[in-house]
Length: 588
Image (cartoon, rainbow, N blue to C red):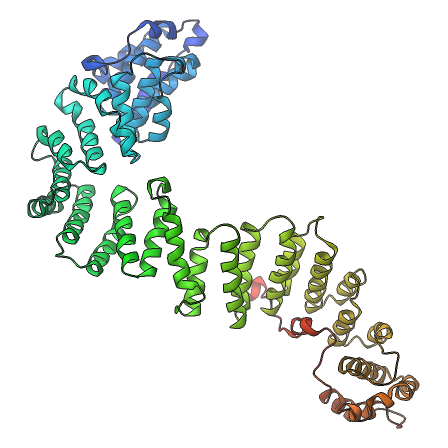
């Protein structure tokens, strides 16, 4: 709270009064003539009270006062406050960003405020500068690069930064010294880290932690364990977490800790400590141990976290492919993982699937497994993800029809209609459009919107059988009689199974409508075609010589109808149960 109040006061004083632009005075020419901040005088510290008094002067002198205040704040490691003051100066004079001195101070403030990527941009030497690099700039770039774990790039700046660091007092040099030691450790030079840390106080927790890591890398496991234990007991929270990780690494190195036990300890550590280099190292170690031990689930969890939450450029080039292989080992065709668990894993890690055809094929294969198990909704959700995020152009046509089909089978025809309408495109082929319209008509009929379904099918070629099937399912007898006219076979014999069912349904519709004379004509036309057929008795029941068809005869005929359907593969969609949609009142 005190830091926020101080920052607010700093901004209030820095921004008060007329701006330099409105008063006609500018600070940029003056700053351009001043030497670049360097050495002991780079960031002179003055009391805040003196800075605030200086800020209360006339507007023509306010920009110099702000500059002195910002440098003092940088010298006190108060980066966020310095950034606010420098931003106020920049708003008054945008040309300040063209000056090397201002960009250096701006980059230093950004580094202290942990905006490291932006700091590197500000600390980039101006274009066209060919002079020897500024040691002060090198020092701040080294620190920002270390925070970003770009250790090789930071290592290249150590020699350049050394003069600026040696000119600082020991206390002011400490953050840079720790950064150089970290760079040495991460680039495989523990002996250099030990030499850099030699001048650091023995009781400095971060320096002690880095010394322990250097000893561990040099094979001095006993003293490293002692130092790690001391930090774990007495250090601040961030260093305690790093020390816990160091102890695990030492245990693995001297073989006093088995990989399986190490994984358990690493999981406990990452459960309580998140979001920094310690977690990243712990996750990377977990992934390596689990992958080597064939623990695909643990490796996938660790690898997925690294891909999602950390800079993937810090991983090996083939790291994503390694994580994808862990996923495929759990859900691929030869996996022994139970199907529900595999489905959960695939959904949870769908963003890690391989791009392009290989990932799409994996989704298709797994969706087929879900369909075979009757898990239509899960298969629909999986393919819907593929449709939205992995498929584009006209390839969406057949896939959208397939997803809608699965939604109907899952009892969600309303979702199918919505999907088909939201994925409509003008560049689908005629065959794709026809297939999508057939599926939409079925979904509409399942919702009871039969007239809309029939209207859609009127524009779809070769859809008479489907139209008739929908009317049959909905018991629309009069419409069915009309629709059947184009389906009734021309010849009386021999009748195929599909032709028999068309004639029998037509007969039932005529009986329901009481059109006995038409039934008689139907009997004369097709009686010979039903001779010696198993369905001949049913046809006789419906169209026999009696003058009327009783309810008992109709029930018997309906029960004895053959199970064949004129629409073949589409028949299961028309028979799919519809899941009722609960109203808001029902859900509450």
